[in-house]
Image (cartoon, one colour):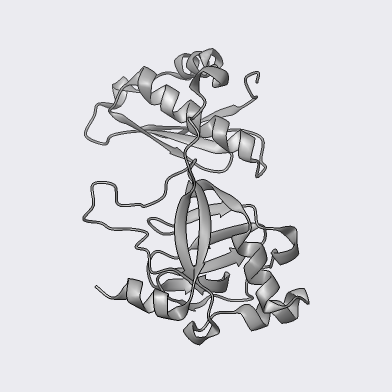
Length: 230
């Protein structure tokens, strides 16, 4: 894979933003994630990289001198040196996340069935049939944007946000994601997971990170309640 065209912007005194073609594409996202790791290796551990769908933010720790930031020319040279084939991520098994799709928990499956003109069971079956790529973490700490869902269950966001419980598994367009905390949310909820997605007391607070693969495993409500019990 040849190097991809990009635009470089000074995002702040301590940060650079690299922007690539504006699209949701798994191969491009993998490229961005690997490039970020390469840049940190080159410029030092005092920097953090924050990948998004098709952009990469390089941020220097605020307690470091801004004079340590690479120049535009230096950063451009590093990006041009990057060889994706030499830095591709090793493939790991998908992370399995249990999800209860029982309507007793208060999901949106009936609403989605009306919108999509599909049976609720079919929506569930299509949702669990795929492995999902984690594109980025955003919106809330630990909220993983994943895709892509089967086009047959792609569903627009709700017209307005509503209170959404921690562990809610939602769909918005071709994306799926999990609310790590109680929050207003506009995604249509298909089910709930008992898995803790974000733990501020952990050394790695977010369960998921960009580049992970996820598979949803259906569980019944009794199994869900058991898993929720401390």
